[in-house]
Length: 127
Image (cartoon, rainbow, N blue to C red; front, side, top):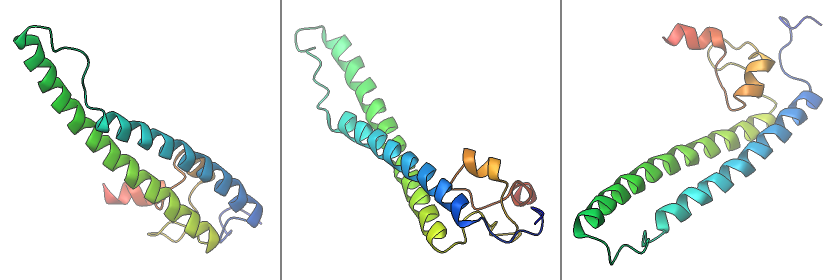
């Protein structure tokens, strides 16, 4: 059956994507834990004895770092949520179907962006 008339990915293809997504979730959760532990760290790097100027600089840097970590953590949580939603689509056998065109999303695209819900064609329409 030609790829253009194919309505959905086969069960074996869906299993392949499921394995890939589960690996990505595991890694993303580990990364999220690192971000959270960095955020929760009290930031005490033994600077009590150093000059007040250096300490003020370090505290400012720490604030920026915590804000950056918070933003990264938020993005990471969204990424994990998107990946889990992809697993639901696999269970429903709707995974890999573009939500705009209704056509199959290219397999290479899904291997790179396994939580994609738009084909390249649909993404280009949105630009």
